[in-house]
Image (cartoon, rainbow, N blue to C red; front, side, top):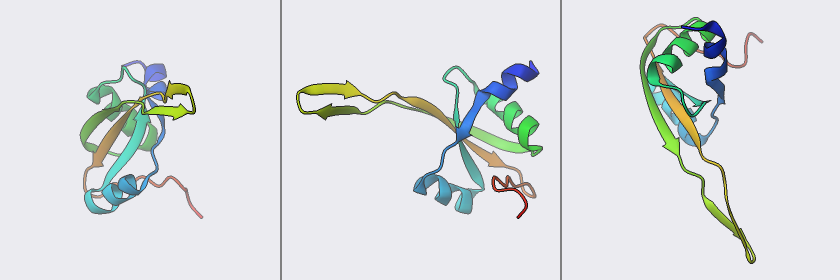
Length: 98
């Protein structure tokens, strides 16, 4: 797989209350990914960037919400996120050594 493509698959970690709970309970980490990424690319990108072994990947497409400000109606942009479960003994530390 192309190394340049793997570096572009993960956009950012998705930080939310639900993501924090998933990390604590199920050892899952949530990432925003590019819309055309598949599970195998996401798995390879996480393993390459963080040096961990991935057990499973679940993907979710979120649709943008319709918002309105007075008479003007718009839509937020949607995005794709991936729930990545790691094998036992592996962990991702976003903060680094302190």
